Image (tube, rainbow, N blue to C red; front, side):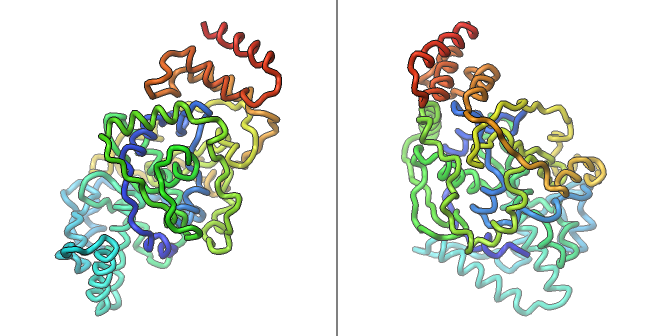
Amino acid sequence: MGFGPFLRLDELTPDVALIQALKERWDPECHTFLFPWGHMIPTLEDVARITSLWVDGQAVTGVTYTSYQELAERLLGLEVTRERSSLVARTRLQASLGVADARHQTGEGKTEYMTRLSEDARAALVVEEGAAADRDLRRFLILVIGKLILGTRGDPVSCRCLPLLEDLSSIGRYAWGAALLAHLFDSLGTSSRETGVAGFFPLLQVWAFYHLPSLGRGVPRRPGAVPLLQRWRFRRDEQSLRLQVTLIHDALDTVPFGHVEWTPYVREDDAAQPWVERGRPYFGRDIWLHAFNMVVPLHHRLVTRTLGLHQAVVEFPTRKRAWERPGQSFRGIQQETDWTVRVREQLTDWEQRGREVASEATSDEDYFRAYARRYGAQVYKGSRRPGRIASLEGILHSTIQQRDDPQVIVTQLREELDRAQ
């Protein structure tokens, strides 16, 4: 089914401050981060390399229901939390898999605990066969999908993907990695008052370790290991969360232009990462991502520098489609909807692998000017550079600091500041 390497990933301690700081820089209109050096975004290549999940195949979509009671009873042998709901209790799922009573033992590390828990689960499941074995496999998969890949806040587990698990032979055909990215984008777009990010936070964390190494938030531990998440651990910080977030914002505001790593995978040996080769036809493309009602665009054309190209001036997208985030959760309040019909155009886009991104630009300068005019001081979140003019000056300096003629730099900078004033 393609989950093997993903399920063998070690636990990564969450860097709550880093995740929160990144969330505060997310633009829900463009579905990208806004930094002083331009747009930046996790891509399908990041998902494949960091998590090993497949990003190719059928979109994770279908019909959503007002209640999943009948499906949960028939396929899981469990009940949802209430009549109009898609949630099942996590403790009920664990109990059904024979691991409800598993507890940490004195002196036992997390790795040892997970190994023992897995052994207990295998011992409980080894005697199952036929329909009972299929039911237990679905219980396990819904736990993995509902708490890791498409995880929600809180304890209950969403079973909105349960219809896709009815035919166990088809599960490996779905692009679960693309659904993970859609879910992450949707979570980043929630109110800034909500701390943290629902879904698989290690993707965002390790993405920052690779692309923003000067922040120093990650510690390399296993050179050469794959998937790439295996290579990192979190650098512990004993300062208060709020102070950490402020310091990260200050650091992002002042990251030197040349310290942003746009193409961190150019020296990777892909032979040991078959999930990368599988997903390559989907890399570097503008494409719609699907996870049922979460239908979000991946605007790769805003980050062509991840392809080793200069960033051309492009139209900055705005969110005009109400269904991109319908504002309805899967807690029983949505209407029954067939998303394969409602978003047929976007689903066709996925099936045709979107649109390849290219750039004929010879420098990033024009893009930075347009970016500065559009976003101004929005890109700065720290305490060191207040005001629109200071922000504009910083962006333009980042754009042209590597040019040779200082007089041209001064003249153009003055012209832009005059326009802003």
